[in-house]
Length: 355
Ligand code: FES
Ligand SMILES: [Fe+2]
Image (cartoon, rainbow, N blue to C red; front, side, top):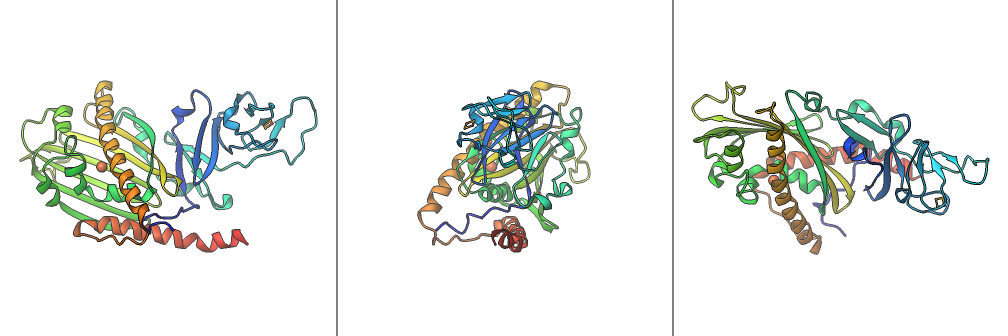
């Protein structure tokens, strides 16, 4: 039995499966929701997601290679197109209609490759989270990457919904003073498919990464805005300007402005692919500033990874272990409630499919 903090998957939803640049050198093998998949860009330029198992003798297609007609199995050379249909069998002209592998709906949009792992007839593209910052490379130059974290995907959402952890987990990077974090003013509200919060830290000490980025000399007014979209995407907007400039009214003033897309795509019940993208809104004409923001963010997110993985190990030891909520868990609680609503909404469809 698994710990109740480990949430099950929402299948009828869009998840980021890959970044487009990952496919520049060929195929990508990635397990999503326990299902091994292979991703590649087909001859028509479209990204395909197929089950990573050849229908001939079961070899992983990801051991093969991208082919002019799709993907070629590396065992006996069968070729499959982006729809999963076999289009070539070496040594014979006839290709039986049964020679095919599973294919999953994919949408490439705003420099993200989204996958739908539920009922294909319900794959409504209008449900994809909008991320217009990727469309504005001059105003918001960005850099992105992905790595695995061995924890349930909702541990990452919990982490992003309670920023009081910054003062402890990230004290050497973006942290700042613990009291200032605990005293931050929070406005938290539910949304149609998740929750949103805004967090203000007025006249607070400047963390080292902020000084490095824009050379703040003294204290700052600092704000964060986080929006959770079920099941596993969080959009973050951050800003800071020198103290004493009435930041609430003057958020557009020069200072530090950055934007982050976080998404946690479940690999298994206790692991996920963390996709993140940081955009620089303060020294846009300097590629080295975007690189520096990325390089500063990376170790910060590795600090989260290290914490989440040991947390998961502890929870796995005892599924009956009761966790205690604190006053700082309000956004986290709203996020979990929104997720439970999404899980409940697809339950009838899930039981229909099983019949
Ligand atoms: S297992 Fe793929 S071609 Fe034989
Ligand atoms: Fe963190």
